[in-house]
Image (cartoon, rainbow, N blue to C red; front, side):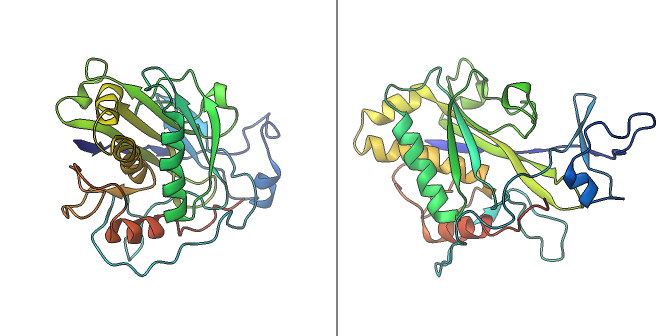
Length: 269
């Protein structure tokens, strides 16, 4: 069984906030607080989309996780700073997620939720389940969608087959990742709109085997590890190793990396 990580970098474009003749349209209190600093925008399929302003508190939802474990971990995204630190999700708002239920094994929602809970505990990032969606899980998804309102699309967890998605061919049981996108203001980047795609047929077979429930949960947790910014490692004692046939929980390096992934700064409101 192998899980492959996917990720995306979004093209950044400049966006003037006040267009001649219509300067007041779409202006928020955050724009006024950041007067003189144009809101960032991204280019998606030739369309310029202004970055949604971060909502909620300017304090962490959950406490930062402290760990003393040592082991192997790697990052999918590094910022441009001198230490090459991770690009991370905003810890000051819950990470919303939805499930695309087509192809999902019966009764699998609690398994997904248990995997999410394990990632939340290890990262100190809060998650919020928003139910089912009719969106098809795809790494080419639009990051801002009318179905989800004026915000970045939530993390989507979907189920497909090798016939539907050739990237699930062979021993690949799951795919996961997020997009690195600038905040509404400034130069900092944040992870957004993660995607998890699980091979529903593979997981159904796993569930029928020994430790099936725990191993299936580990598959989802591994892909969520990619979503919050971890890459594969070569150490077979870590759940983020690309091929996992036996581990049911995080290794020491996983825990160190997940704690780091959750230790970001709040996005400016």
